[in-house]
Length: 118
Length: 114
Image (cartoon, rainbow over all chains, first blue to last red; front, side, top):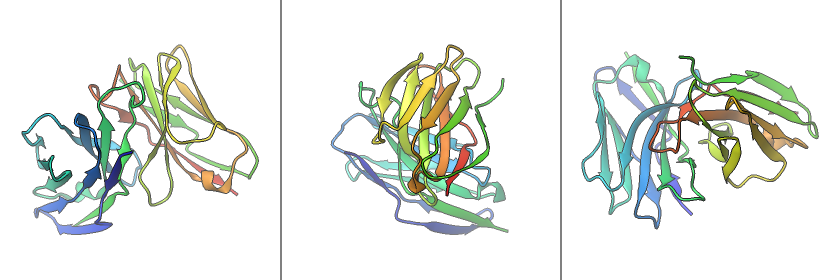
């Protein structure tokens, strides 16, 4: 079974600064996908960034980038130039490569609350 | 293009009752997944429906059941409610097989069991 661990319950960052969220996972799979989702107070889960395990290049989406270390099973998220609207709960999630028993099954960590202050 | 919608927004039930939660997929999406998110925790996968058939299930008892309709909207039914069923229930829709296609989440239904 896979597990996803987020060891930082809460992180505070000032506007325009950079914050890095950590995520580790445990799996025996070789092919899988990793995600960071954002859940603001509105509760709607929003995909921030996605990484395919077979790709060595780290994914980036505007101010969001990841540091994917496959051997260490680590998948951290960096938020650059933080904005007030980035305040939310951030979840790291894992999904096995498509097999009959893994369809669409995201396994989430416990989340990290990010608070951006003026 | 409308997003994923869920109803009701909030619901209060008593232990032993039954509840039905509803989800309307984003236009054109044929896959729906349901998740349970207890307070202060990450979502837990309940099950997924693809073209009206259940094709994946998490570690939830049979009293959690679902349906997907021809228009790809979906229902989550929970029988014999327990206090631990109190949670935010999220549905997510996508077209085809994830993760090739992004899952879009609804705002959730907050269920409180007294």
